[in-house]
Image 1: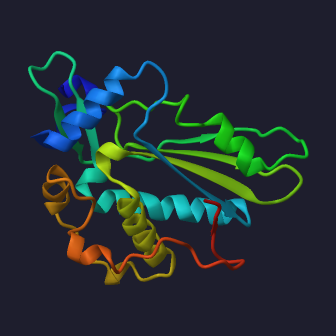
Image 2 (image 1 turned 90 degrees about the vertical axis):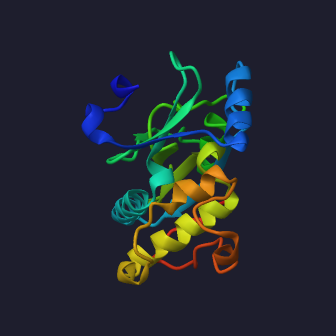
Length: 216
């Protein structure tokens, strides 16, 4: 298990068993020979590369705050699967080049990274993958995010986006103190936050020249 973590034992914060929900998700992931039915996709567009980099830096801050976002899953060679919380989990960002054609760059990006044909390495935290590309014919940058359902659902994405928005707005100090309870909630089938706190999340970015805009 230690060999699967960059930095070895010094980068391991905690080790937990899986919840029944996670056991089921992992089972179906391993059963699928192609694609992954538990990948969530979201897309955004940014006015320029600088704004995109600011967004990714803010996401990294949010990942650093939540144990579940720094969690990887290990099962090979073990009597039962385990989730391993890393102390440091850098974002994985890939840059691709889109075809210079008449079609939508966002649509091309989504086709190329369709969850029906894509899988991500569950042993490498965070279970978030980012693909970025310059939109042909414009100065905009497109981003596609893949998130695995083992670490959250659409509500998790809403909470993440709300916290990223706070960081970008210079309101990081208003966020609740980092808590290790996120794993506790996830092991019981929740996302990042208790249900009573979820209703305050918002699921879209305001559209303006200074912020990214959601594409789906």
